[in-house]
Length: 277
Image (tube, rainbow, N blue to C red; front, top):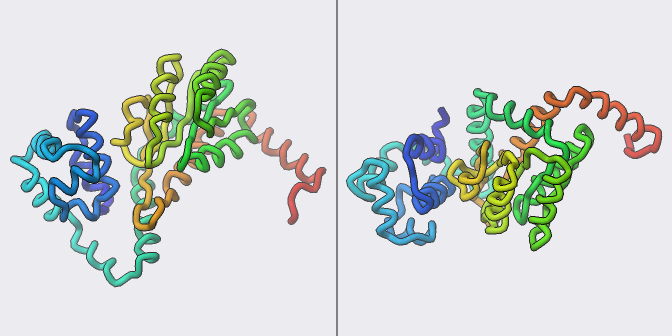
């Protein structure tokens, strides 16, 4: 198990039945794992967008007498070596945080079962809708770009609005059985609504998200978490991007003609002079 503060927090939350408000607090705590041991209940409430009593009830739900007891526990379990990062500048700290996120992802993939199951579901869906809005749009585009080389019908859903539901319905009518979603903070309400609709239509929802406590978790049949970095002005998403490629590899394993399609593409690219060697 990783010694990162985020990993330790996730272990603390596992096994507890949390309300939507409590899941929101947990999600906020994971994203701000390094800061949480030093935040007051009022500060945490403001960050999570909930009331201060909700933070207190959350601490009690985890088995503590109140928030002060939870905060004391968090201070006790923060790895001592975490302070070593103080000698690095802010850019180095951001890189180190991403390296820690990647290590945690590697440890999570020690059990390949969820990714392999998700890969089979995506491979079997004809067509395969891939959803990602706002911050997650680039993740969805990158997956779709490569997936289209091995999957016969990939449909990128990277624009919101009233047409989004229509495009999900069209995919279902065409035979889709699963939907892949990339969900990163800040989480657009449209994504949550779209996943709720996708489930209503009978689609199996596979989601790559920044946390198992993200708002999309409730609407996902399989949720594959990969933390984002929060040390810079804008979040960094190296781990979700890499998890998307791992999922793509698992999907290829479920497509018997994947290699033949790749070879066909390569031959066509050479004939067209598509790439500069």
